[in-house]
Length: 110
Image (cartoon, rainbow, N blue to C red; front, side):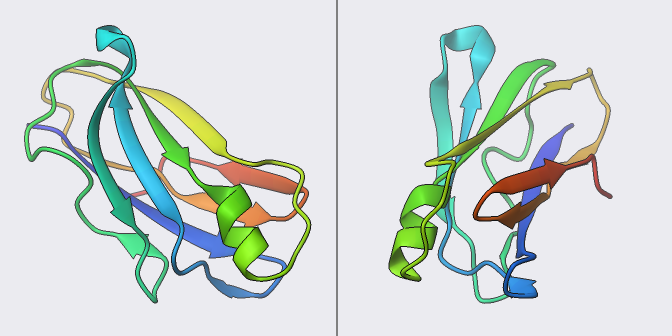
């Protein structure tokens, strides 16, 4: 059983990024959307998508342009797309995003 969660941190402001639209897609199905959510006040989405994801290629799409526009900030990336692979029975995948208006980073969290 594999699950996905995420966390968005705004390094320019030094706090969690609340209100970021997040979408989970399965790339093996032509980018079919599996789930959509909005980050909470803590910048987190604890459970994104089904509780049991099959092995395959997925991506998380973050609506960063709208997030920065609401804050009155210019941003270079209108969205951030993180593609990753789920291995069969590999457990939980935490896909965090560390964000600023002109850059971002990610890693496989725990």
